[in-house]
Length: 119
Image (cartoon, rainbow, N blue to C red; front, side):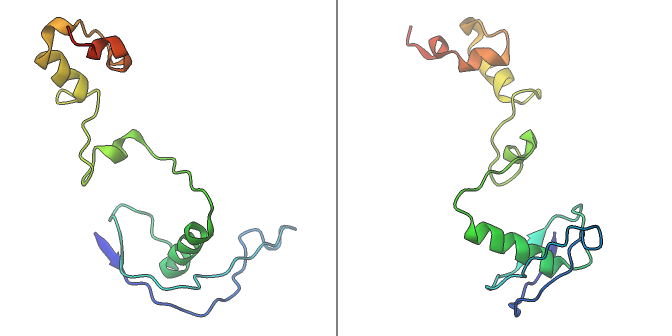
């Protein structure tokens, strides 16, 4: 992991990526403070990580609602360690082995309430 220490700084105006294209838009840097933040080594690190993470921090801090769009693999990585469905050690395979008489034929069966009825 790459550890990026973030320090508080005075808000400043930044040039927008759209500046000069007729749509000049600016945003402020982080107004609060952050403790150490970690990034995976494979993350694309910009030239100004502190500014970029500060913007993310401020947006999250001021948001009323947040939606996170991510890949399915986020839940199988640590610390969640939620089993996936498709792998040989996944949830479907484990349940099919554990309950051979349940009639599981696809992952969709796991969302059928009848599967969980007491027999």
